[in-house]
Image 1: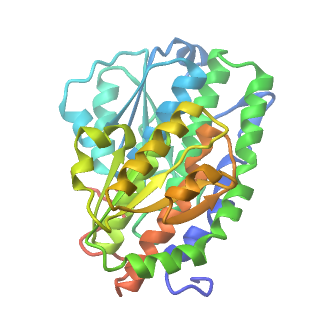
Image 2: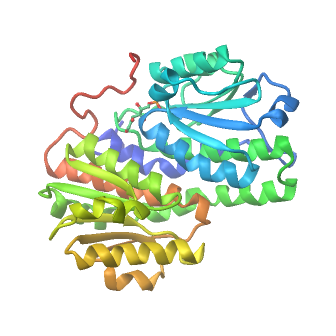
Image 3: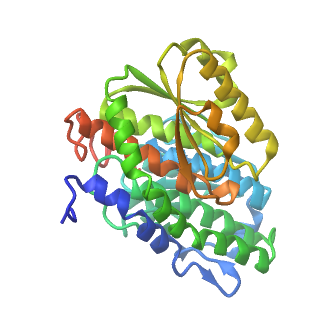
Length: 368
Ligand code: F6R
């Protein structure tokens, strides 16, 4: 059942093109992106004036990606919150607030308590969930299922990717319902999403190269991850995977924060993974990251750079270059995350750890 793999997680990493295609399937109907279940009137969606995404762990990282897309496509303010923090603050919510709860299991206690709290304040709740009929979708006003299939590995891979994709669909569904995008624009964005499973297949081809790198990094004391814009949540996710699976000290940073503190951590030989934005996207983002890589390399870091194929400007500063296919700027997390998943799994394997069942962790966290 592991499809010839030593671990379920490695199989699930390879299943990502299919998982992604399944998440998208059937969601573009008559010029609109639609949800799976909607117990709300379209007018309620049109009245929404603020969005909160609440989730934990990797699901939270998928929510951070969603912020960039939903703000851009819907012109709505979006806050992304750890469910455990959201619940015990006093968030300002009313019937025009949409709370998007992202949860693979649909049973995560922190996220469940967060939506109960939101509903008490009359907010509308939309669940993004991988498990049919779980508690969180049952207690929500609308549901989008990720359809990634069951995930056995405790560390989320294909479910995470499906959450990122489903969150884009939430953005497009809101844009459709609210009329902030014309049907032909929604169609174009959806078509770009539909091209992503192919791009994910391509990036899976980097696995042998990443495996080799992993053997090299297995003895490192710590690994840092840097990203900017949608690459920032990818950096956080890369670091979380490495903590969970390889039990290594790993931190993700917003690249712009480097000079505000983390650069003090840079020392000779420290591996730093940098997620580069496309050189064809916003030029300013790309050039800022390029100067970050220069700075850390000058201080002796070992730079591992994830960059778009053909981006030759990074070559002089990359001790190790991992090339990913060119995709639209907002969608890059769907490809840039993959090498980081492989890296963490392969470092764990090189260290002899159980990749599917990391110590101290449970697949579904049903206590607060
Ligand atoms: C990380 C991981 C966890 C989950 C988190 C939320 O690899 O698996 O961080 O993402 O526990 O779980 P769900 O999505 O089931 O609410």
